[in-house]
Image 1: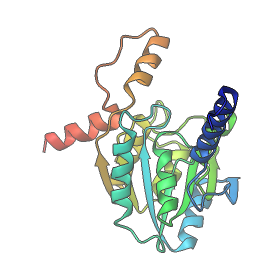
Image 2: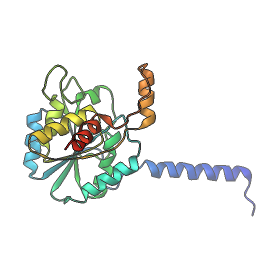
Image 3: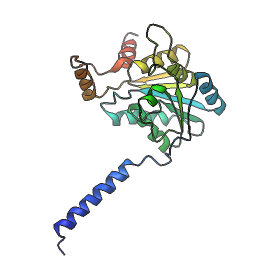
Length: 232
């Protein structure tokens, strides 16, 4: 039987709807966060200490995204495979953007997940990852990194560093750079993996600010840690 044009069109639309529905589903085991609350760095540190598990923290690009997201996720998967899901909490910045995509990979591998993020995210309605189990908002006038005009980490970055046993940066901007630097200085185990920010997003941001199009997409963390490595 030859299918009528109208029936064919409806069937195609149905397939497209089902594909979009399935594509939007989070990884198996992903559910809305069981705990979302505001806390001080001290209380967050006490929470992780009470779990008596190793805390593996990933930092990197957020809104700047990745030029090669697949490669970033492959790197993250390789890192995760070094750790036991029964003894490790995967901690990131709570949001779904950029490095936050690692949450889904972590859940697929059976890890408990946590997130630490500035209250700026709440105030700006930034979406949380659907694959983060526990979220801590830290009252902060900044998004993180070094507080302007000082040498001190912001409350959010302080919480990130103090909660971590191991910190891995896959690319990253100023905040990732500052947190990884502080973690290294405190004697924590750190690792840096080069990755470029999304080129088009970087160009559009520069355009909106009236700046010249960027030609270096390594990010502040890349500039800091790649150059430090080459100078050894």
